[in-house]
Length: 339
Image 1 (spheres, rainbow, N blue to C red):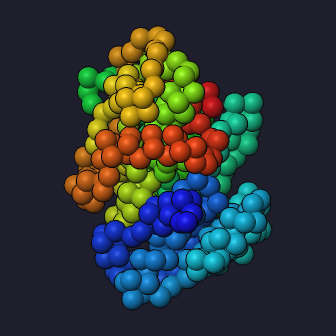
Image 2 (cartoon, rainbow, N blue to C red):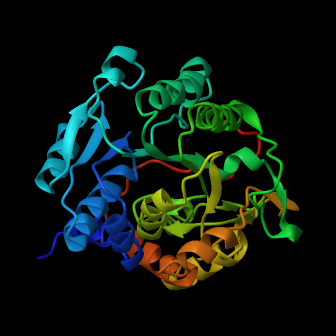
């Protein structure tokens, strides 16, 4: 019987035509910093698979502390070279392999409250180390839509021109991360793309998973943060790799999320109907939320391969079948920036 986890990982790492074409054009190895997080393994595997299909052999090098040796071995089994490194160790960062292409995925969100000093070190100090080490490289760095703060729902989400107004130390430190990358991009002429991602979904985690689990367990849904965006993780991976083509000085900023402005109440009712469960709600919808407008990215990469409706169905089925999750809630409902 097929392993559902391996089937999911295969789906998440299946390269799109756009990724294959990008990696035909971009020569040289790719270093992925912070590869052991939620998205890193499937992104690394996609890069490896796309390079093979593009006929462009290169090393895909995943860098992390690798507290989970199984995750490291899985990457190695799929052709990804791994390097163990504490990225806050400046001497260790200096010794990392050369590469003309860098994907920066490292950072700290969960546990930031109560551990603010490390959060700022990871999100602001680390980019300076990376930019010094890879001053001759092209960098794509992950950020977050949280830097915008709460946007009026009526405006359809923040655009890349929206002035950031981060709420809470996590979001402020993420804006600090962007500013550090911008500083070194300008000073050292490093081509760079900043990706403000809003809620990737891979069936084992994401806003839809949070909602589906609560509905399946017949827990009430708080609708105070009444709206959100999400994107299938395969599509987020693909856009991140394609963003290598769009790095510039100063950095190019791109919102990465799905095109739909989703209402928590409506999505919950759809999930409940699929599960044949009743759903109850608490609170009332606020007129603002953490929302992004991704039309610029859509103009570059096209629409995501999976719609929100398709994602909702897949997540509901996954939860109903009691398949594994990562036990990492998004805390998307937080309005005070505490994570």
